[in-house]
Length: 164
Image (tube, rainbow, N blue to C red; front, top):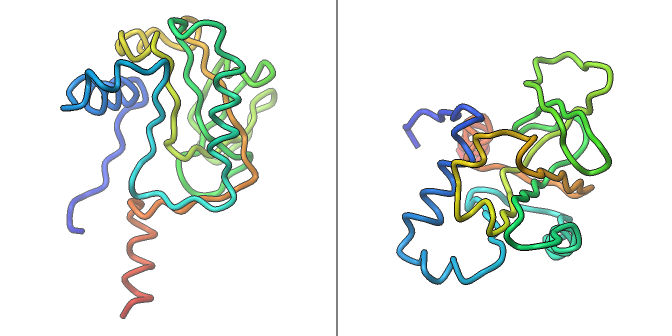
C-alpha cells in the first residue's frame, strides 16, 4: 500500500514481463509447452471483456506459433490506464507514440489494460521485443468492455476514501 507505483520504460516492459513470468517462473517447462501465453495482471477486474474472443483473434492471426506476434487488449479513447497513440494498418500497430493529451492526425488514441498474448516466437526470445514493431507483429484487440486497475494509485486512494 505504501510503495510508489513506478512505470517501466516501454522498451523494457515487455521483456521484463516475459523474463519474470515465463523464463524465471518455476513453471517455465510447463509454460514452454504452449504455443502462446496470455498475461493477466492480478490487480485488474474486467467487465464485458471477452478473453475467449481475444484468444480466437490471436490464433486466427497467427500463421505459425514460431512467428513473433503479440496481441494487446485495448479500447478506443482515453479512459484511465496507459493511453498511447497508435498508427494502425488494420489491426496491426505499425507505430506508437506517447500520448501527452494531444491527438495527432493518422494516430488513434488507445487505452491499454496490460493484458497480452505472446506467441512462442516471442516467448522463447524475449529480447527480440526490443527490436520494435518492424520485427514483431503487434496487433490490437479492441474491446467495448471495461476494466478497473486496482494497482493504479489513484484508484487505490479512491477505494480507501470510500471504505472509510
